[in-house]
Image (cartoon, rainbow, N blue to C red; front, top):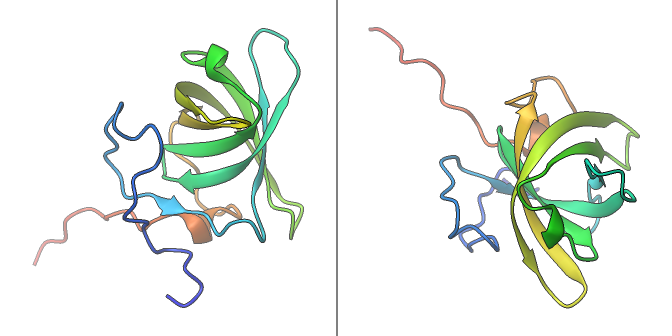
Length: 137
């Protein structure tokens, strides 16, 4: 597609080697129109901010402003916000891995609640197609 929304990125996402991904993921258009993410740690620490890097039906990678490796194996609140429409989606997700750079962290989340993103949100255009049930002839 010309807009690149559904094109899977053949480059590996940081951290992808640690926990195998079973779904095709979509790398977000970046930085214009970036989906912002607020991460609420379970321990009451300050909310972290970042941009959605890639997305599947059951998880996502967020580029966090700052370091977040101390939160690995924690369940965090996520608030995803579309800056164009102002739409938001809230979820609870387990932080499964984190790769720190000098100033940022690539953080891999697996959704807990909901376990799979619901249809009909502003994220639909960014999700890869899910295979439907087998059709009988």
